[in-house]
Structures are given as structure tokens and as C-alpha cells.
Length: 178
Image (tube, rainbow, N blue to C red; front, side):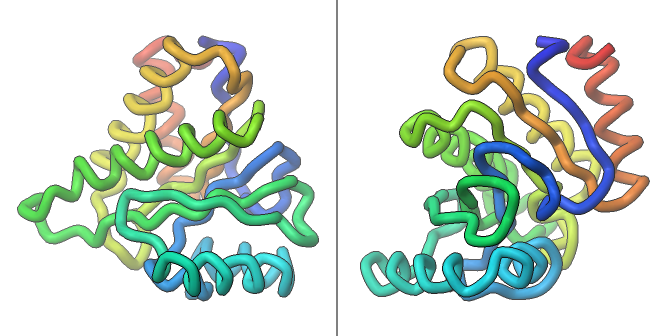
């Protein structure tokens, strides 16, 4: 497992992998935070494909995932997933967040993606507690990697130092990184 999981601090739009995951909103039309940065850096091609998805299926439900081109990004694809807004844990937020990771990884396998980078889904404006979100992310990724050999690299890209240190601590505790 140690060679299949990495942690980086920085800008997910600069990571060179097969796919980056976008913490999108239900409309897929871009927004703030990671979503806005990905749409801005990737250019119009991402938005055009998101519009087609929205027109076909009405957007993306919380916990689901869809895939588009990555446009001008160094990645080949963007997997858009909609994380839950935190309501104190009373509205199935943990299940929905788990589904973000499960469904993003499922889309990755379906599209032959071998390397994928995740942001800290729902921990910004959606206010999901960072530690709880990190535990779910790491649990879902490690379970997936034990059972699936098709994805060879998962990178957690933390925008801020707090999330980076949290992921580093949890990944070391679980012997996922050296």
C-alpha cells in the first residue's frame, strides 16, 4: 500500500495524473474553491462537457460522480463528485461522503484510469469537519486499493497545511505511507 498512496500539499490543478477529482456542486457549472479553480485552469472544454451531462441527466447528485475531459490541465480527465454539506451528521453526510470516494474510484476503473488525485472533499464551504472527512477518505481509498489492482496511484492533494498534516498523521497511523 505504501507505494500506491501519496500526499501532497498544493494546487490540484497542477498535478499530473490520469484524473483529478473535482469537489463539484450539483449543477456542475463551476463555483468557488477547488471547483472554481479546476474550471478556470481547465478552460471551456470542461464546462462544455458539464453542460452536456447536466442537459442529459440534470446535473450530479450528492455522492455520485461523472467524468469529463480535463481541458488544459495536465491531467487527462476530471471526475466530478458532489460532496455533502455538513448538517451535524444528522443527514447521512458520512454515507454520502463515502459514496463520493467509492463512485469516483468506480468511474476511474470504468475509464482505465491508473492514477487519481483527490482534494479534501466537502471540507471547505460545505463545512464537513476535516478530521472526520480525512478518516472517511483514507478508509474508502485503502479498502478500494486492497480489492482493486487497476488503480496504481492515489494522491491526496491538500490545499492547506492543516489538512496536509492531518492526512499525513492518519496515513502514517494506518501504515499507508512511510
